[in-house]
Image 1 (cartoon, rainbow, N blue to C red):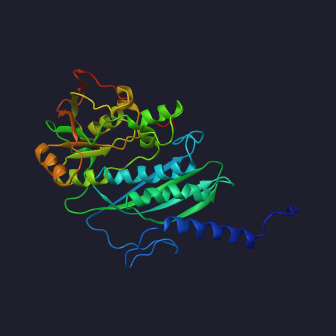
Image 2: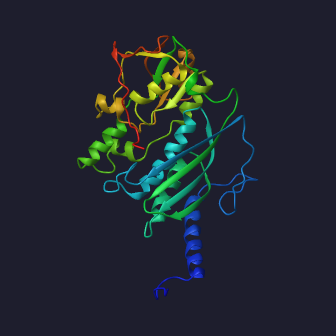
Image 3: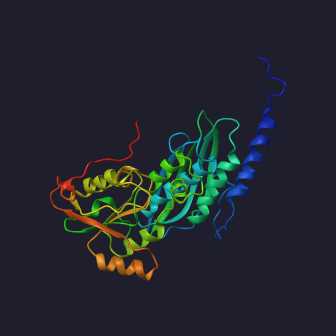
Length: 316
């Protein structure tokens, strides 16, 4: 079989790949590398020993599933992929040590634009990209594996809640879903709610503070309160009674319950005053109390009415 005249040779393909990787490494390598560590450039990254428990989590973001390419730039897919993965560390009270990324994309994809979004998220979360891989595929996807550490008494799990404890969220809900709705209606990329959708902010400081305050259970609200609170209750074998749901300005109650991608923290604690004091001492926004856990596993209510299990679920 004869090849087209413009088909690159194996050597030319390698040079093109090396050049792309070199440009991407320059985009990702913004911050200083701690002494003794090795990030991009070898077959594997070298990290300093972790303090306490080691945390590992993986997320995949796919263009057209997690981001509408007709409404948002490719940078935002990279940003959301890293931010959502780092949020899993925040949900356990951990702090990031680094991440590796695997990007799959069809020919012609602007890989530098995609990695600029990845780099932006790495900087704001203090989670350096220490390695990764590139490959060809039909769709654009970004797989992110994050590594973190949890010193002291260890990570906060979903399964630790007990009856009679307070349930809180780290902020008003529904901003991301409202932002997507507003963008579809023609709002600009700089609209405050649109930014909340395209550039989510992992609550790392809040997660560390809640862990230090003795939170019994915690998770991030990636799929909506209606689904994630039920997941936490399932894991802890408790029910709950909600008094209210804090709806972000510009959002609807339905968006606050089932919109997803808020990445606020859902916190359960037996030590409410200690939690409030630590958040105040660290200059953090006070979490909002929304209800309490109850012993009856089947009792899951909002203002006395059944609280439906609503939220974002992938069709697998």
